[in-house]
Amino acid sequence: MSNPQEVHVFVPATVANVACGFDILGFAVSRPGDEVIARLCDKPGVHIKSITGDGGRLPLDVARNTAAVSALEFLKHIKADKGVELEIIKKMPLGSGLGSSAASAAAGVYAANLLFGSPLEARELVAFAMAGEKAACGTAHADNVGPALLGGFVLIRSYDPLDIVSIPAPPSLFCTILNPHLEVRTEDARRILRKDISLKNAITQWGNIAGLIAGLLKNDIELIGRSMQDVVIEPERALLIPGFSGIKQAAIAAGALGCSISGSGPSIFALSVSVESANRISEAMKEETDRLGISSDTYISPINLDGPVILSKR
Ligand code: HSE
Image (cartoon, rainbow, N blue to C red):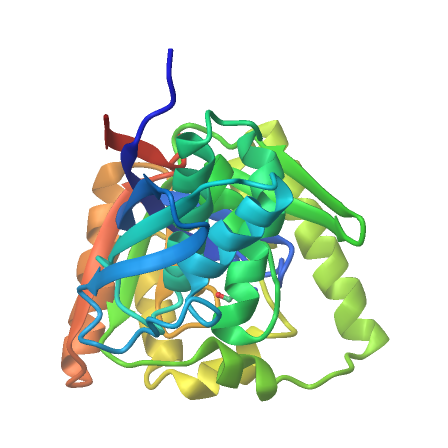
């Protein structure tokens, strides 16, 4: 079968860090997500035809655009003799902590790979999407682009060399996300972090991340819940999110296994074990946010095991 000339793909939002796994753990949700339409063209390189849904805020410059950078790195890698034209359809809020730049980066390279007959597997595309992430926020972390491309929970065991491990998760897990209508730039949320941590905090964090992974693998819901504690990053970043502690308390009181900042914030996520519980948590988080006079959106989703979706190709 010949390669498609045009593909339209959807790539989901992701929750990075998952409380105690700063830069090393993330999972994909079903929605929201970003879309990219990519077309083969004779002119080598990547060309951005349009960006919609971003309010004119994202760069049209190929060297600075996350989707274009990831696609371009891929084209260089395969020594492509043709180029790719991109239409980027933003459907996710920027600076939300939901992996917006990662979804676009992953969509750019995922679509480009399809146009060239899928020479690389999704796992091999992660490094290219990381280059896109770096263009967007200055660091090439993989805890959003990994799950965006592979679906499910993804552990970044090592960055150098890149070692990515998919972690199975209990099918009953549901995620509630509250996205307050505030913007936090990942770059800023990283800059404020202390560069050193105490041995005491490191031991607590190691115990929790190991416990969380063990809980996911063993389908031990209680263990997942009590491991979702972040003593390193959350206390510092919580200061960027007005009302964080009250919203978290509301989620826990409504039955969440655990609740923390999604990625670099300001979105807040909570895990639970049924859609009913996820709905109750969503209402409680929203009520508290409304009480503070902050407008917000909520999303409820199972863990998305599929990752990217091909919406159409021709
Ligand atoms: N791990 C990254 C961070 C994710 O927390 O800065 C950014 O969304």
